[in-house]
Each structure stands twice: as structure tokens, then as C-alpha cells.
Length: 228
Length: 228
DNA sequence: TAATTCGTTGACCTTAGTGTCAACATTTCA
DNA sequence: TGAAATGTTGACACTAAGGTCAACGAATTA
Image (cartoon, rainbow over all chains, first blue to last red; front, top):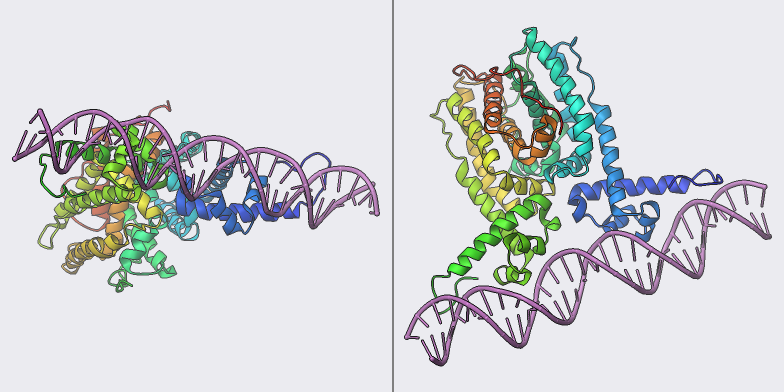
């Protein structure tokens, strides 16, 4: 695994192939889930012969775990602003916006994560019990302090965070539902802006947080087109 | 399939076994997805020999489709109040409540549905394009009329419906996330009441809908316990 | 260029899973 | 009771998939 013993350096081939495999695997796992994705399908997508995958990853499970870890790393990096000193409207508004955009740019990671959760999150219990839990409790405390200062309604911070999480994540995980129902091939940039604006309005106002003029209402509603 | 030719009636055995199989299949498909569930696992859960499953369902796919159809039937039945004459607060409030309770009582159906959506909803395009789309457009129109009457803010009805959908569904689909993070084995009845109350408060208020006194704020926040 | 490590790949093994079938068992009804 | 329909089940065939291996090829460094 580690570039072993005497140093035959560069390892350019290795780096290239690892990248190809990981990218292909991310797509396949997101599309089909762990069981549904086969090493063959990953190999084809990466344009490598199947045994070659095993050269880099001894087993499917190890490959999957690696993909999952990469996803979690990205996750942890991504959402960390929000402190008690912030203005709730700015902080929560920005968080909602960032998360919607993350659904737009990173739907695969989101789907892999969601798939894990739906099926019991066997590979995630550690993460959920530690990093995620800690992160969430931290944010909940911040919100509780805002509530104590009378800056927002006494909603339950946990449920609020889960509300933001679910309503934004939705556009990555269940994109098919959204596009099919709206009769579009995929969501455009304006759509995501509209989604963010609507969620910001409803959630901020719903929590009794004062904020500058809302951006919603420009169009009647999500331009719906005929089914294809 | 249909109780064939000359009528040897009752068919009690058939009815019993079909019920056993469908129940077991629902659980297995929800836990493991289509690919992940095996006929063997379904047979074991139904306490029937494996070939017996094939006696009732020629193929795994047909069994899966049957389970999916049953889920959709339940779905369509379940959420149909809400008309333009209703009071928005009552209608949306009741809808949110019903949907949270549905997540509590029917998590399996929800998971199977979510799983389909995440993986492209190959078996659902027809449903999404027709029944679901129609249902959603109907509700969107009602909300638009409320908006036109000044009964609520000009939020985008589609995004609002998806918001309600995702935030309630979440407690069925991603129950593991919720319970793990809250450090509970499973959510209690009060938890669901609290979830519904919080969602009602945030969403109704967020849409500028007037409503009677909110139920939130009774407890500090979701009683979190030590991880197990 | 020779030695060494890294990378590739066809062929094979094994297992798990789906679906089939024919023989047998049970139930139903005349 | 006996014939017809329904239901049960062990054994088998076939395939897809994961994983192994040894022989070969390519790159790197001395």
C-alpha cells in the first residue's frame, strides 16, 4: 500500500490510477450503492482492466471505505463557520446558502452518505458518534445562546439543524424527484439560487430571526415545464 | 398468478403466504435495497423455503415491483386533504403533523421510496411523471391561491412542498442519523410530537401564516443523552 | 544495460445468488 | 374416497461477482 521499501519514486502512474479509480468508484457507489456497484463497472468507468483495481485496492470494501472517508473529509471541512458572536441571520443564512450550493456541486458525496444512512450507517457509527455529534452539539449550543439572548424563537436547535440539513440535502439526494416533477433535465444555477432564497426566508423568518429584505417572490413559482 | 381456471376457492394458504412474503420483502428491501436483499434473506424472514418464494413470485424483480406498488398505494391514500377553502394554518399544520406521524408509523415504505429516488427511480418515473406530479401541482395551486389572497408570503409553493416533504421524511429515512446523534435507541412518541411542533412553528411562521399559540419551547431542547 | 521495483493482465477458483424442475405432499371438492 | 388443483421442497443449472496468481511488460535507477 505505502510506496514501499527502497524508494522508487515519482509514482506518477500510481497517483493517476488511484485518482481514476476513486473518481469512478465515487460515481458508481453513488449511482448504485455498495452492493449494486461492481468492481467491473468501476473498472470500465475508470478504463482499466478489472484485476488492476485489485492491485490498488485489495478488496471492494476497502475501496468503498476509502471513498467514504474522502467524502467525510470534504464534509468536515465544508461547514464550520457559525459562532455565538455571529449575527444569526448572517450565520444561518450563509449556512443554508452554502449547503444548497454544496448539493449542487457535490451531489455524489451526498448520495453516498445518504445511502449509508438509509441502510443503517454500518460504516459511519464512529463518525456519527464522534465528529458529527460534536459538530452538531457545538452548533446547537450556539443557537441556544442566541435563543437565550432573545435573538430567535425558542425552537429546538437540534431539530432546526436537522431541518436545514434535510431540506438542503434533499436537492442532492433526491434530485430525480425534483427534476422529474419540475419537468427539467437538471436544475439550473437560478434554480439553486431560488431554492436557497426560499429556504432562507422560511427558516429565518420561521425562527423569528430578523433579516434584510427577502429575495423571494421575483417569479410566480418554479417555472414548471411540460414533461418530456 | 390469478387464482386460476376452475375455482378451488378459499386460497387461505395463498393469502397467508403472500402476506408473509410481502411483509418480509418490505423489511428486507428497506434494510438492504433491491440488490442488497436476497431472496434467501426474504425467505428466512418469512419462514418459508426459498423456492416457495418463487412459487408466488416468478422473479425478484416482480416481487420488488409489487412491494413498491403497495408502498405507492399507501402513499397516495395518505395525504390528500388540503383544499383552497381550508385555512392555511390548519391545512399545512395538519399535513406536517400527519407526515411526521407517517414517518413514525411507516418508516419502511419511506425508506424503500427514498432508496429508489437516490438511485435514479428507474421503477418510479411513471409514478413521478403522473400521479405524483399531478398531486404536487394541485397542492401548489392551492398554495398559490392562498398567496394571491394574501394569506401567506409569496414563497415558491413547489419548494415549500419539497421542504415539508424532506424535513418530515427525514425522520423515517435517516432515523439512524437522528437516533445516533441524540444518543437514543429510538425516538419516543414525545419526540415525534416535538418534531411536529417545531416544524409547524418554523414552517408556518416562515411562510407568514398566522396560527394559534405554538407548542414549542416547553423543554430546553431535544433531551440529549450520553452515547451508549 | 542490468537489476530491481512497479504495474498489467489473462486465466482460474470460489461463492452467492437467481431461477428451474420434477417428485412429492396437502388441500379441496364432487 | 378419489381425482383435481394447489402448495412444498431438494437438487440442479447458470451466472455474476469477488478475489488470486503467475507470467509478462514497463519504468526507474545505478
